[in-house]
Amino acid sequence: MAQNFLSCDRDQDFLLAPSVRDWLPEDHLAWFVIEVVERLDLSAIYVEYRCDGSGRPAHDPAMMVALLVYAYCVGERSSRRVQRRCVEDVAFRVIAANRAPDHSTICRFRQRFAGPLAGLFVQVLAMCERAGMVRVGTVAVDGTKMAANASLGANRTYAAIQAEVQRILDEAEQVDAAEDELFGDARGDELPRPLADARSRRARLDQIQAELEAEHAAREAEHEQRVAERAEHEAKTGKRLGGRRPKPPEQGDLLAARRNVTDPQSRIMNDRGALIQAYNAQAIVGAGRVILAADVTAQANDSHQLDPMLRAARANLATIGHQRPIEQVLADGGYWNHDHIQRVGADGTQVVLPTHDPHRQARKKLPRQGPEAERISALLATPEGRALYRRRAELVEPVFAHTKHTRQITRFTRRGLTAARAEWQLIAATHNLLKLFRHQPQTA
Image 1 (cartoon, rainbow, N blue to C red):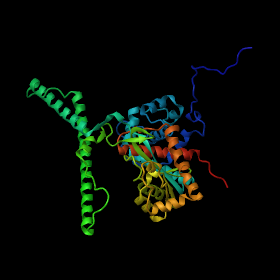
Image 2 (spheres, rainbow, N blue to C red):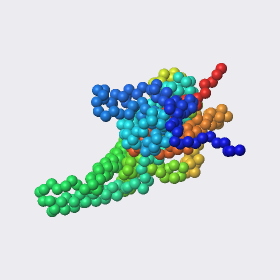
Image 3 (cartoon, helix red, strand yellow):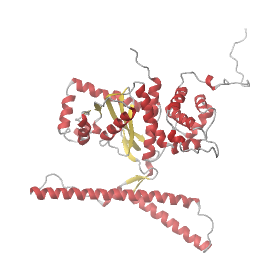
């Protein structure tokens, strides 16, 4: 008896079904993304295109948005790989309507419309609200270190930056002298490409040098203000204040200051014991692990992020028409800031975070002090308080785990704080979109 196999004729007329509707199952994520994008307000993108119909036709912005949203959903952010998958991947071909936008077109679209793409976060959050997924009685806030699109080895000290600027100036002077000798008063050819690159590099170095000098001047001004306030207090009271006198910033602090010449706004941060060039990506998450607000900062420490993140979350909730207030905020010990906790709690919101930090105890520092610390310590001493705080890890940690490990999004693809913030909000929007895709409404 002959063996029986399904036919594999690669010369047949239709290897794929003639209608793209038959290429994917009806419940595929690609169809969901297409339907969602059809309901989004993309007027901020469409308004940037000419209305007279002249010029070379552009790709439909709705298709480009759907393509980028789906790519971020599946963790594909390289414009070159997205272009390749528009040829090789059936889901990408369905979204792109069998077109393959060039990687430069994809990259320029993402860069040009970074703001409107980041604005999709609130629109997707509004869809989650209509689906009954936004529940904010108890929320959790946390941050994660996201690698910047820059090498750790690209950091330079202030002294090294000065030396590099001087080297570029000397090189330009030597080239000018050589051209004067060669061409005299004649113009000659255009400057060589290496020198043009050096000029752009010098502009960046000049900017970094000016920023470092401005920061050092600000520290000096802050020191002088503290000394003046201290002297004024001692003059009024007639008593010398205890403790160490403020130490002025030294010139060596400026010389030792470092900046990254590839992405000057990124910072060297500690990520689980390893130093990386990174940004601090923040998220505040409600029940069901829906992200309510997302932001990026260049500060490695979380102590100044509590109040801004709560204000951003409340603004987003007000925009989507969610009426219930945030009642409790759970955070880790890195968010301790007495003033922020007091401001957040002024409207009745309860902040819960540890007051006993093992790192502080290892450095022989006392536990947190003050009325807020006493209130939180009393709460965490009860079984109900401990059970409440255990929800922090349950709410927010899986969001970062899903983003960085399941979707493999561990590094920003664009440079600069503004670009990183826009990309993080798009990442957060696609996280919520995936939650909406998998949402199972509760039946009575």
